[in-house]
Every structure is written in C-alpha cells, then in structure tokens.
Image 1 (cartoon, rainbow, N blue to C red):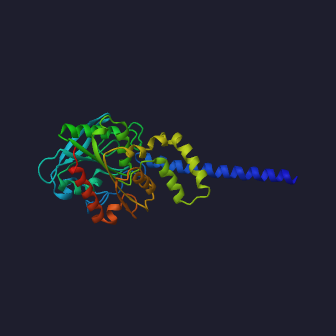
Image 2: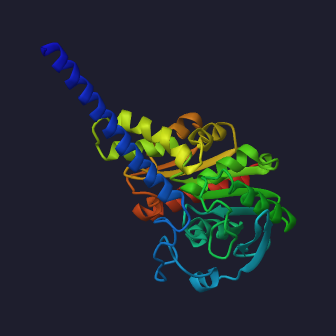
Length: 318
C-alpha cells in the first residue's frame, strides 16, 4: 500500500512539473508571438520631438538638424520603400552608410550614428522597411528577425549602388543587426560590404528567449526554456535556429563595430561577448547600459569610438 501511494505521489509530482513547464513555456511563446506581431506592444512606440539624438525621435533630418536630405523610393518585392538620403557635410561621397532600425522602431534612431558619419564625408541612407509606417505590410504580419527583411536591405544596397555608392557600411541596432546578419548570409552583394556598425545586435533569438527566462529567476528555468523553444516555432512560424547569425560575422565584413550594455534585459550581452571572441579585431564598446542605450550612458565615449572606427574604415584600401 505504501509503495503504491508513493508511486501515485511521484506520478502526480511529475504531472505537476510537466504542467508547470508547459504552462510557463506557453506563456513565454505567447510573449514572443506578441513581440514579433506587427501591431503588438513593440510597434509604434511613443515618439518625441525634443532631442534628435535620443531614441524615438519624430522628424526628418532638416527638422532635426537643419540638414539637407533627399526622399527616395526604393523598389522592393513588396512595393516601394521610403528612405532618406543625407549627404555628407561637404562635397560628394562614394562611401555610404545604410542604417537599419530595430523591431517596431523608427529610422530616426539612426541619427546617432549619422551624426558621427556625416562630418567624416559619409552619405547616410535611412531605410524604412516592410511593416514600417509608409512601407508595405508583409503578408504574414510578422517581424521575422531578418529572415525576410534582408531582402529590403538588399534592395537598399542596390539603390545606393545606382546612386554612386562604391563602399558600403551597414549599421543596425537590435533586430537591425539581425537583418544585417541575414543579408550577409544570403545576398549575392554581401562581399561588397566593407563594414558593419552594430548596437545590441539580436543575432540569436534562441539566446534572447533563454536570457528572458533567466532574468525572471523562474524555477526549472532550463526545462521551461526548452519547452518554450519547442513551442515557439510552431506558434510563431520562425525557426529559432535560422535566426542565428553570429557565425556569419566571424568572417565578414572586413571591419566590425559593436556596442552593448550588460544590463540589457532584452538582448543578452553574451551575444556581443561571443562576437568579440570570434572577432578579436572588432571595436567593442561594452557598457552598463540598458537595451540600445550605450550611447545615452556615455555619448562622448561612444562618439569617439565610432569616429575612430569610421576613420579606420575610410583610410583602408577599398
């Protein structure tokens, strides 16, 4: 009798553990689904018009800085994509930086890196890609961490080439880094990219999900993470393994810059630490900032590091 009771208790405990892991895993996959769904909580953040070098600024380059710019339309597989082209402070330039913003963000977030690039004689293209305001909506209504968005970046690079770009620098923060990674993996033009400027790059969605679980200090976090990673591809339609682009950056592009804060609650800094291990030559600004806020923590340090990096890129033989 005692042995039978013990067996029943063990079975009940195992069922309870399975139910707990399944329930929490389902909730986590729901969170991922919300994050990647256009119109979800990561879409259309509150915008501000006070500081163009702060995130979520609303206004074109002339309104922000009094700088001249051109509005262009980029032909893509889904339709025209709006973009701004900002020339350098003086003269013309064959070196172009193409900026790709993060999930649900705005192209104005690229003003930070543009403010460093423009005085150095670099033309900047600020892209609005699929699911942005003014751009076509994707058929599935999802942000896919570059798995489809890279084609919009590919179209932007082709457009820059037609407009006179001979040397390409790609810049992106958060999911923008993932888009750059997928572009480097898939585009026939990837070899033409000289440099990449990353900020808190989301180069591994599986690691990002694991980081979120660990930050919540949940019991049995390993089991919960495993369940969530099994459920998420089925519910969201994104293969987590396909989002891993860290290995891509191990060999390209020639020059690499990254900034990341160790209090980032969204994208684990371990991604950038691993990137530095793979690329010892990478310029790495490691801070204590929250997600994509390394600039805000110490603008002078960030500007100086990026300025030196871009000077190195410009000085190199094409």
